[in-house]
Image 1 (cartoon, one colour):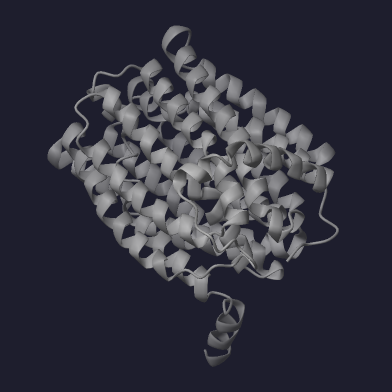
Image 2: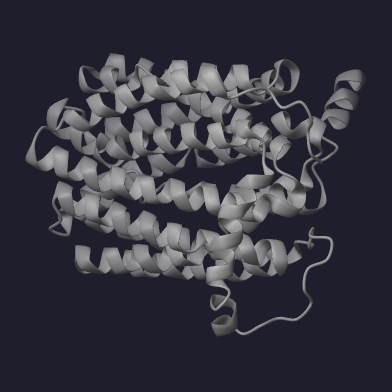
Length: 414
């Protein structure tokens, strides 16, 4: 027992300082973060939205998120990570009150726009996380984050289901958003304890209007960073774009299709999402060890192979088949998060991480915006199953590109 305790302590001794603060805040946020989103598409329907309106909400969500990625990456690499993360976490927290009291889907669109502008801190958050994990521990480090976050989020779908049974769809989701706002505010206070990791950030703090004037330069430097990165990173980026578009095609319509075409009840859906989270919990740490021991590319390929049958299993499934499909999806998510995060940190130098993340997330979110809008149009106007068929074909393309062009990094950056 003493030897086991000593081994565990040695294995996870890197969890301190910034990483400890971030994990504590993520645990709080994930405890409640999924509650209102378990039935979000059904909530929009209650506010007189249609599947295509849901697609428009997705489009606005991802376009607004994309619009701040370049600037977020630039600010993270020039002015530092901490101030951006702390201030914008407060903004994200407060925006949840807009969702909670929205009288119609039009206000939901406004709330999505405001909240995603506040997510300008995402590149800084990715950068400070990569900065805080030793290179030899990146697989297990990112998996540990997934593991703890997933454990925290395990109760969210069940709470959403209970709120649905007790208050109904509309009031249950509203109460969920209020809980999210409160917990996120506490997480924001915890993040005040973060320490800056950028070696020499500009000390001078500019006014926001002056910072936004830097946007053209941020875009230019964001695209220019790819000239300094290995070809494998560009290939990985391309695979992720296609996969993200594929996912966005069907993501917001899973609960609609399940409840309206497969006969899955609302509370059964909450149990399915809980099962997905449980699978990710069980598989996250082993996935990290696989990435650290056998390299990054093999687990990444395995993640795509496991995910590939999911769209077809979903549209032709019953409750039993969906449990197996969500099992494969959970394994795929764990492998992908550990593998992608680790190889991205390996291939990108510390001083370029903010710009690289900003640029890659900008393009990814643009494609997810288009995917969500396309999925909503196809679902409402052509066939509810068509977005899932297209998603399946795109995943096959991802597998082929992954095999041909994504190579194991020779050198790993600190």
